[in-house]
Structures are given as structure tokens and as C-alpha cells.
Image 1 (cartoon, helix red, strand yellow):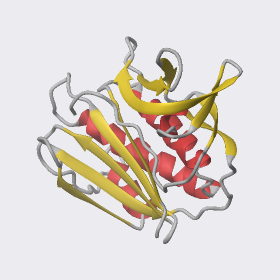
Image 2: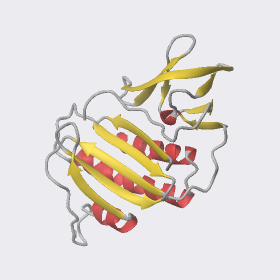
Image 3: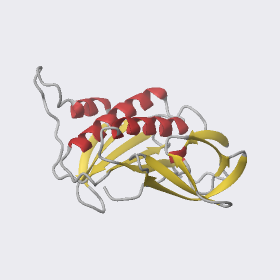
Length: 217
């Protein structure tokens, strides 16, 4: 059975979401043991897609949805960015004196393929891009990962003790960032920033991981 790693989260419609998206994709792909060159390319592609989503005309209270998925069977990485705006982005040929308009040209050049589809479960669209991303490192049983990739069933080291994660949900912080709320087998829930490093150990690998933010894009 093919192993599919995936994670989904949402970001607010603000300029600071672009560097946050870059940090998240770098942390996630590093956790999955992806080749560094592929990580650098994915960071650039996701940055362009999120920038376009933020520029699209959509209600300011709607978030931008992001999904990252990687198939170990074919080494294919898929990046998806969803927004609540209508219309379809198109590749432009800007003049030499134009500062913008080159984002999708870059995406087209760097990816295996890309496209646009109607957003599932809501208004707007999803722009997706796929690129080759081989795995170069085996994932150890005990490892340090980005918090956004924690999944139920894993054991997390918190305050010097191991706790089993029973549930994972995402929410926005008061500063507009993305926070994970971890329900544990013992004690109160714990809130951590999505990019914070956590030491975990798996009780068994089921081939998927993810955390979805609250709210609607």
C-alpha cells in the first residue's frame, strides 16, 4: 500500500501569511525526509501560490487553505492553495518594465504540472501544483518534527514526560497565526505554534498525518 503523507492548515488573509507558509512547508517536508532541493522548490512555489491567493478579491474574513501531500510510491509532492475568490489565474507575459505578473510563469517552470479546480465544499477555487520530491532519509521511530504534522496515536514529549495524542485540531491565535490544540491521554489540552518542534515517537505508522485549521476559507 502506497504511503501518503499529508497535512492541511489555514492562514489568515494578511501579508505575514506568506513567510508563515514558507516556514510551514519547510518544516513539514523536512520532517518527511524530503530532498533539500525539492524543499527549496516547494517553498518558492507555495510562496507564489499563497501570494496570488492573498491578492485575489475575496472577503477579508475568509482564510486561505493550504494542503500539502506527498506520495512515497512515486515521489510526487502536491501543493494546494484554496481561496474564496472567483475567476481563474492565468499565466501572463509581463513587459520588462512591469514589476509583477511573473508568479505563475515561475510556477509553470518549476513544477511537473499545475492547474485550477473548483474548491470542494465551498465557494472559490483551488490552485494546485505537483513536483518531484524524492525521500532521502528514513523516518526514525523517535524524532523531532514540526508540530503541524503531529497525528493522533503518536506519543509526544511534553515537560519531560511522554503523553499520547488523542486529538488534534487547529485554530487561529490572537495574532493571526496558526495554533494546534492537542488533546492528550492525561492532563489538560496543550496549545503549540504549528511550526514549533516537538519530539514524538510513533506506536505504528499508518501512512498519513495531518491537522486542519478551524474556520472557512
